[in-house]
Image (tube, rainbow, N blue to C red):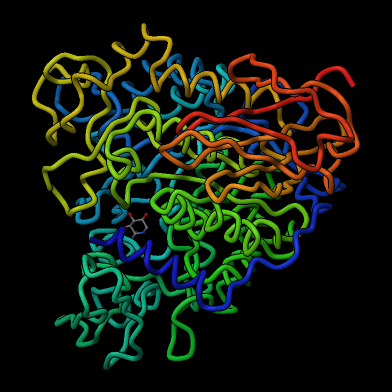
Length: 562
Ligand code: NOJ
């Protein structure tokens, strides 16, 4: 099982000398004061003339695999008009931005990550006009739209590649990576689904082309200046339409050669050029999908303002797996120390539990609602940008049918109600539903105050009301139980103490608040989630402050009355 391998990898990374080191309580990842003059007044999110370049830092994102969200025309496939219909649901949930998996035309060898046309919409999903309407409706509701930027490779059906492979003299021949023989070997043994052979011979031009992923997905050649310009123009095309940003697919792989398989210095140089394109607009974001060792992925944040605004923190997600199965917070604490705490000022990360590339966390948690509530509180109270995966909020588990590859387990239709098609479509869905659709769906959970859905609504509301959770400094607090995680989140005008029990058994723990700012305060901690009040805190109790939590229990505390 790949997840098991990942958890093992995470653990080995932790064991092989990645000690937790010093905690810098003063770290401030808030964006540096922006003294740029924005040349373009193009505020996508409304008529307001004031750009907000930092909107993404506090927004709660939802990642949506559109094919499976909501089918508006009864063909069994989710589409843009279906998403428009469901926008009010997302707004009510407290979602501030959507990341859409690829919605471009695609032969679907890799579920849309093989892009056949960078400036069009897959007819399965609708039209460019539907997309414009989506942008308008979403922006009216205060929801931003972030696309998937798949710029490491295209589909072999993309006209760029069709031209490139038509002859060695074609002006676009050099837009892809060709060699008279395989030039280097960068295959990743952890990704067997993409095959072992990275070079495919093309009869017409009598050369091999390079593809890090499938043979139907040739890599773009970033050594070519025209190609680099073409990619920037694709980005401008969508920014001009009003798109708020891109999640950059496989952004650590743009340049590969015999010396560097990933993290090539030239990749960093290009991403810095791309950042300048975002800066032309003033309020657009790039979130990089960059994998690798913590110290390498941090480099994609540049100096905090000249490369990517945010990176997806896979290492932290591996820490989640390890923590949840070992029932202890130390893997998470260690990963936070190795990543977030070492970011340059201004740099931040996307924090996720589940996505389209892996089994859903809810399934891995054995469908345990209380466990899932607890893990969602970890995700939604850690600093950074929370990326919730569609259906996570109702506890969708993994599906069993494979249409493209094993990752389809996490790409099944959204559960809207308990009907046979889960309210996703009026016909046969394009892939079988996940097995728990009758119990874990929006309609059933809406009416249950204790449901996972209403829990998500409540926690996201807290997160949105208290930006300190997204942006404030992060200080781990020492507890005398190996199962209890506590961290103090602080900004100039707010501070919250989060305490979470990772164990399936109740825990009585004491926290040492004395080295933190709450060690010097007096008052009654009050749980924003339940309204419960905890024992009085003062100078005498701060060094061994008692907290009692049920199995997988948690509190998000503010201090009242000092
Ligand atoms: C990462 C994407 O998340 C994954 O789904 C895809 O297969 C590869 N990149 C290739 O685009």
